[in-house]
Image (tube, rainbow, N blue to C red):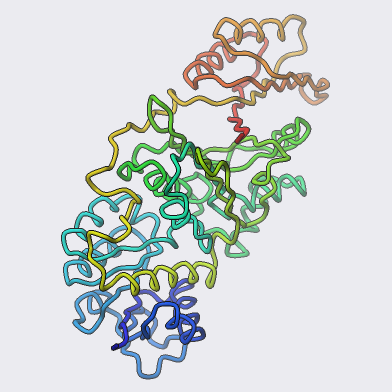
Length: 434
């Protein structure tokens, strides 16, 4: 049987790792795929690739790969929305299968791309788009296919997790750790996608679609960053028995699907609360399997390459199969996708951590308790600290039971209007992940 010819578009960190692993483990990969896999063409902006590419056609035009009649599978590793979308659609139009690690592309344009792929009878594989080397997409789409998935919760951005770990373990400020993350290459010069939750929301959008069988709807995901977190809140959470993580949560409820990324208090004894540094982890709760945890490297040259090549092997195995009998892109057959709505954040339910800076006056705590009680918000615990010498204020930390977000929003507005409360109330959601 003739070799399957592959074109790699993008020879950066992930592209270089993919090329290296394909060359190093060529024999083992071919044994698993059942056919020899040959890198026949590479598109790169570098005039002199830092890899041994003798005998491989090199071009600086990614579309030359997409239109090359000799190429069977295009691996898209250029990133971004625009060129990547054009490249993938061009490859599909020319009958090529596609493997991509581009979470932004899939989250935003996946519905269009998958529809075109079905029309042309080709596969678009994207395991590496979520959580780097962790095969969580395959686990949900195939390994847990007997389950009705209840919720998915994940630490799916290594940069944010590194920052929060350093803040907790070493008492450092957000800005200080961010600067180090940029120096180490964990964060980009513009870290917005990482620290504001956009990167995690791209990944969570994909996980939610696969878990619940709904179309990709990134524009409806709620995102909240970690830029306003202080070491004080990290320490107070620790004293209460919690860790703060930048968590993505997708939960199916009778009213709709929660799709949200935000700082979250998690009980310190949960396994996922002890995922530190740049590592990623995803918990999946199904009605039959219960809770499972997938942990590993969420980024990096070879961990991500591992997922790219796993997809490549799957595509090679399925190339000769009937398109109607392949594993669906989003786990469910296209005509079986659900119209279950994505809920606005105000309709989501959570427990809450509230930190209130109050003047050292009698009666303030009673007023706070009254405001919460009037709105049906039950207090789980209260921690009142000593008076701060520099400003004469008393920090009050409260944990509530689960309540709708719209009720807590109303309560916070009332709390901030109290004469004895100084500045904005800090609110962080709490998830016990039982």
